[in-house]
Image (cartoon, rainbow, N blue to C red; front, side):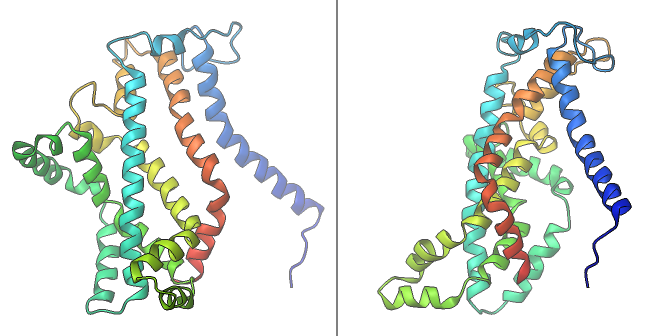
Amino acid sequence: MYRRPGLGGQLLYQLLAWAGIAFAVFPVVWIILVSLNPSNSLFSSGIPKKIVLDHYKELFSDPTHPFGLWLWNSVKVAGISSLLIIFLSALAAYAFSRFRFWGRRTGLLALLLIQMFPQMLAMVALYLLLLNIGRYVPWLGLNTHTGLILVYLGGALGFNTWLMKGFFDTIPHELEESAMIDGATPFQAFVRVILPLAKPILAVIYILSFIGIYSEYVLASILLSHVKTYTFPVGLNLFLGTQYDTRWGVFAAASVLGAVPIMIVFLSLQRFVVSGLTRGATKG
C-alpha cells in the first residue's frame, strides 16, 4: 500500500525537484546572458549592465560565416531525414508486427545487434563509400546533403523500428481486417487505418530523429567540406577559432538562435510524446 511521505520527505522531494530545474535552466540562462553581454567573455558574464544585440547582428552581417544558410541546411537535412526515417521505419515495423515469415526473429535481433555499435565505427567506410559513389553520381557523394541524409538513414532505422513495432503491436488486428472487408487493400489499410492511429509514435520518432540529426557534428564535419554546405553544428565550431581569437558572444548568440527550430518542433508535437512512449513500452 502506498504511504504518503511525511513533511520532511515532501520537503526533500521538492528541494530535489527545484535543484533539477536549476541545473537544467542555469546553462540556458548563462548562454543567453553571454549573448547579450558586449564584453565577449564567457567566464566573467553575469547580468550585463548594458544589454546589446551586436552579437546577433554580427551573425547575419559576416559574409565569411553564413549563419542563416547553416541553419537552413541543418533544418533541411534534419527535416528530410526524419521524414524518411519515419516512412522506412513504419514499413519495416509493420512487416515485423503483422506478418510471420522466415527470418523474422533473426531480422529483429540483427537490427538490435547492429544498433549496439555506434555509427562512428564506420566513419572511414562511410567516407570511402561516398567518395566512390560521388565519382559516378556527383550529387550523392561527399560534400552533398543527399549523401549525408543517406548516412543518417542507415544509422537510425534499428532503434526506431523496434520502438514503432511495439506500438503497432498494441493496435488491434481487427481494424485492418474490417477495412479489407470493406474493399481496402493491405497497403490502403496500413496508410488509412494504422498510420493515423500511430500518430503518437510517429511524432516521438520524428522529434528524437530531428534533435539527434540537427545536433550531430562528427559525421557532418567529416563528410562536408565546403562552408556553404556546412550544417549548423559544423559552422558553429568556426566561431570558436583559437584560444586567442574566440568569439564567445557570437557563439552564444548562434547557440540561442540555433535552439529555436528544436523548440518549434518539440512544442508542435509535444502532445503526442507521452502516449507515444508509454504505449510503445507496454507491449513489445
